[in-house]
Structures are given as structure tokens and as C-alpha cells.
Image (cartoon, rainbow, N blue to C red):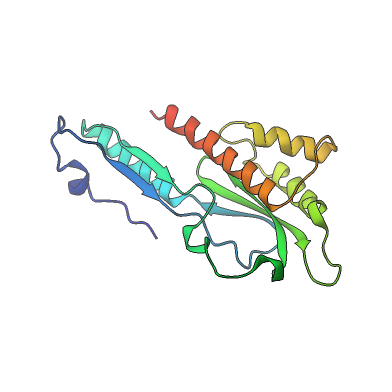
Length: 182
């Protein structure tokens, strides 16, 4: 759990001090063992950044920069497992104003003919589109792609496609949020 800094930690510098400050995080949740459907996970690193940004602004201090690891938890980048031997569920990662929505579908790749391929994502996308936070804070190119997939104008692809669209959604959403900070 991320702990917000104290007021003293935020305001110890002089208002005209040089240098930049950055808040960063790697708070994307572990998706292992999630049930099918849409789950919500607080973007704790973003929430912390907003709190620090607001307190610094009130104290007359320079604004801060923000970074994160987008839709990948760095703890799971190299797990040392050969993906040829894994069962892979359809999984769409979706950034909203203050949460990640993770839409999990059926098996994309599984043992003994249980695989559904890209079609495994369709029920999860239906649930994602029905979620009240779909399109928050802005509609992005990913949202258009989701609509195209659900209408049959585009194919759902596979895990690489899903990560690409999820990452683009995250970048567009966070860029919008940073550009419109009060």
C-alpha cells in the first residue's frame, strides 16, 4: 500500500528551488487468479500523485512530473515460464480516471481443445462496455476498436493486440489527465 507523504515532506523546499520532482509507481495489480468478468483496482500511484500535486500547489511549490509502468506490473515481466505450456485467458486492461478495469474472458489458449482464440475476449468486452466507467475520463482509439470488434468490423486478435490497445488507452488517458490537472 502506498502511503502519502506528510505535509512536512511536501513543503520542505523553498518555492523557488531548482530541480524537478517526479512521482512514479508500478502499481498495476497482479491479474493471476482473477475471476471472469470485470474487476476494479484502484490506481494507487495516480491517487498518490494527485494528492502530492494538490498539496504542492497549495504550498506554492513547483508542479511534479508523473510516470508509471502503464498496464504492466514489473514483478511479472520475467517469470521464467515458457508460454507454450500456459493456459492463457482473454484479458483486457482498461485505464479510467482512478481505477484499472480488468475484463477477463474465457480461455484464449488452453489444453485439449478448450481454446476459443480471440472469440474468448468478446464476452469480456461486452461486460467492459456495460461498465459505468467505460469511456472515463475520455474516449480513446481503444474504445473505437472495442466497438468495431463488438460490431464485427474488426477482429479481437490475441494477447499482443490486447496489450497494445490497453497500453495506448493508458497513455491517452494519463496524458489527458496530466494536461487537464487543476
